[in-house]
Every structure is written in C-alpha cells, then in structure tokens.
Image 1 (tube, rainbow, N blue to C red):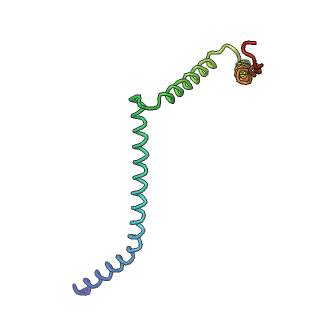
Image 2 (cartoon, one colour; image 1 turned 90 degrees about the horizontal axis):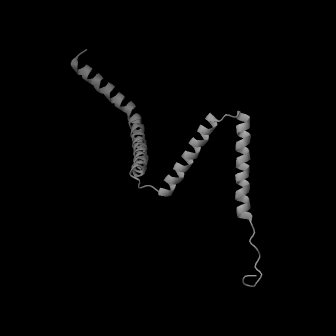
Image 3 (tube, rainbow, N blue to C red; image 1 turned 30 degrees about the vertical axis):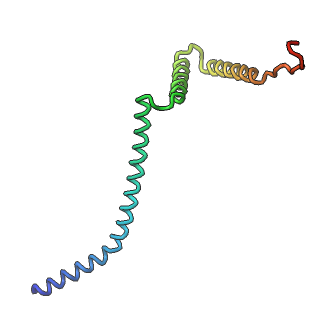
Length: 125
C-alpha cells in the first residue's frame, strides 16, 4: 500500500471513529455534570454533619437535646443491665415491667386529670 492511500485510509478511519464517538461525547458531558452535582451534594452533606459533630464535641449544640439524649441513653442502659442481671424469669420480668409502667401511667393520668375544687365565690370558704 502506498503512503498516500495509507494516509487516506487513516483519515477515513479517524473521521469514522470521531463520528461514532460524537454521541458518546454528548452523553459523557451530561453524565459529568450529574456526577459533579452529586459530588457537590455529598460534600455539602458531609460538611454539615461534620459541623454538627464539631459543635457537639465543643458543647455548642443545644443543651436541652444533649441532656434529653443522655437521659434516654442512661435509661436504656439501666433497663438493659437490669434485664440482664434480673433474678426473675423473662415472663416475670415482663409482667413486673408492665405493672410498673401501668402504675406510672395511672399516676400521671390522675395528676393531670385531677379537677380543681370549683370556686364558691367567697374568699377562704
């Protein structure tokens, strides 16, 4: 094959290859934009979480939420340890817990449902 026909063949093959790759280039550009948006969203989420964690470590977070979280964590750990070392069987323990929860609920209901004495219209009588 002479150099001129080889050069022509290379030009034809290169042109055909570029023609075939053109639609892929358009799709890749849109996918790169999607990937860029996704990376930006992931970075924003990670940055927000890191900021909240940093505030919690420094003690700048909401004190009410940290106290409530600590209280709930303590209750959970206490109940878990209590169930593990309880001398009663599982059925007895569940029954006791249910009874205690019922008693506590009754106390709360009676405290909030107590009707105040109706006013008589006279002071001190």
